[in-house]
Length: 67
Image (cartoon, rainbow, N blue to C red; front, side, top):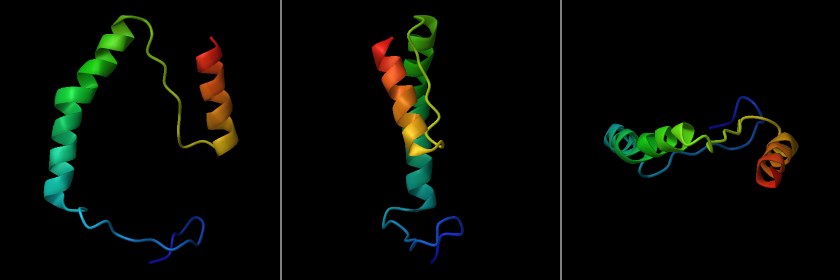
């Protein structure tokens, strides 16, 4: 296929399945979300919007690391 945004070629991963997605969400809920909550409560959690322009993500990341 072709990406609607950039016109680049799209592909589907071999492990792109409903079962794989369910497994990934389960791991997120059991492992990742508790860590996010922990670091938020500790006051050290920082979030960067990875959907931004690459230069903006890089600048935001640098600002977090320099703080």
